[in-house]
Image (cartoon, rainbow, N blue to C red):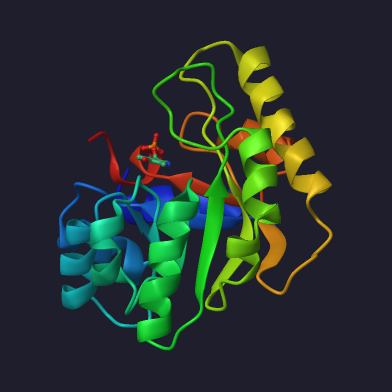
Length: 219
Ligand SMILES: *Cc1c(COP(=O)(O)O)cnc(C)c1O
């Protein structure tokens, strides 16, 4: 099947309240344009340099989402155009995003990444770290950042029960922090689910799925 067919098939299977991020990392602009011409306007990339090159070459009505781990020293390259940063997992990084956002007189939307997988290698905050971050005075004083939700990745396993438990855990945390306590915290987006597990993620309450290989083919 073509990229356009894959895309339309997946889109038609998603509930209305679930947003599709087409994960286009490593794929050439021609592939992204095929998805664009089929109506897709939200693309996710995991490297700032690659995302910036694609942003420069592609139509300007695209929403670019950074889904990868972000190094503080590269934040400045994406702040002029990025729509949502999914993988924020430290106060230090938030501080740099806020600093650059102030420079550009912008408000940047971010998701905090929560560590839900068993694997040591996956990035993210645990619940205690999340609590500390959201309650810190430093965070409350960031004027140009809005935390609009949480993001997480389940363990890479065939064990559906385990994946489900991990997604449910993230949903529980998400629900717990619904109440907006400061202007820069309004949790409405729950980003969880990839090609292999997005249906399960939606069943567990996901509102945003990040799908790459099922649209663009294997990397
Ligand atoms: C690559 C990637 C995806 C998409 O993975 P697929 O299995 O190709 O759908 C989703 N989220 C993150 C954070 C990724 O790095």
